[in-house]
Length: 327
Image 1 (cartoon, rainbow, N blue to C red):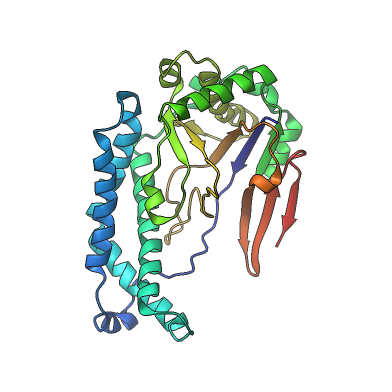
Image 2 (cartoon, rainbow, N blue to C red):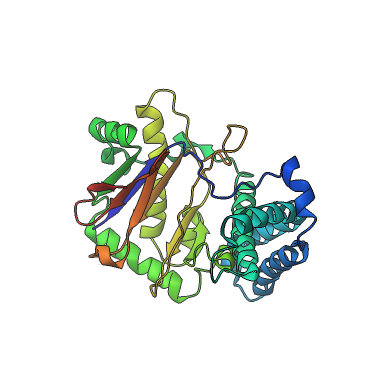
């Protein structure tokens, strides 16, 4: 099975913790132990984790190191702001569940801090990512991508806000691609991200464009796969009036090594308090290269929208890719 999942949406935000301080809580904040030192320690440890690995990485992995290092720097700049938000969130959670049996103050501090640092890391990663606004999609038009999208599939994407395409590559090309990615993994090119420190995700990743993929070794299928993914933007720009998608320079190659590997529920693009969005992303395209995938191994779950009584949820399952909606 060779699948391409595409998502096109403007997601809404559902936050369990209000991180905006207000006048009613300012006096109370000063009465509880400050968390500046705890949060600063977390930020420093993340930065040290990135820097300590820098000297051991090979030259071909430098782009990933540079990105992680920039993320750590962004977090260190905003530590005071994050600390204030963490104190406020801690008080809210303590008021809600602090009276429950078995819930200790240290447990609340630890979990709130971890969640707030995870959010800070996501914001920092987005801030670093938007420095590169992306290229004109027409420069990445691909003769291999266009045939995958007919009028019916475009309409499905617009109606459901996601689309699953099966068998997007020839079997021989997919086997070659799988072998090339396994080779990258075997040579240590796929690395953990700083987000593993906060329990957000523990997959192994590498960022690369077509040229970097070709020069990483005698590889042909990997550059082809990146070209295929980048070509989606041009197809949609031509098919959907008013669409103006751009294309980032690099694609992400990710490996979930098993043993319960995960990526927690998240938003690729969150709505901000002022009604805007946290980054320029309009669409996410994912190419799956697992042969004979079975649902019990893991699946991709989409929360299409936040509604009053919960989330409408779609589980994309093999072999048909048919969405099964649940609540």
